[in-house]
Length: 90
Image 1 (cartoon, rainbow, N blue to C red):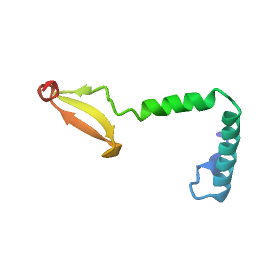
Image 2 (image 1 turned 90 degrees about the vertical axis):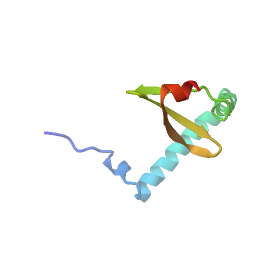
Image 3 (image 1 turned 60 degrees about the vertical axis):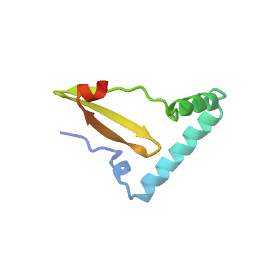
C-alpha cells in the first residue's frame, strides 16, 4: 500500500498556497545568503564567468555529427548546432 504524497499540493503551478510557500522559502533563503559575507563576492564571481563572452568550443559526437550548444547576445536562450568534423576543423 502506498502512502499519499504530503507535498503533492506544491506541484500546482496555479495554486496561491504553493506560490506563497515558495515566496516564503525564497525570502528565508535570501535572508540566509545576505547574512553570509561570502555570498556576494562568490555570486559576483560566478556571474562574471557566466557572462564571459569568450567560449570554449565543446561538442558531443553522435555518429557522423558533432553537436554544440551555443549562447551569445543574439541567442540568449541558446541554440543547438550540428556540424561535421571537417567543418568543425575549418
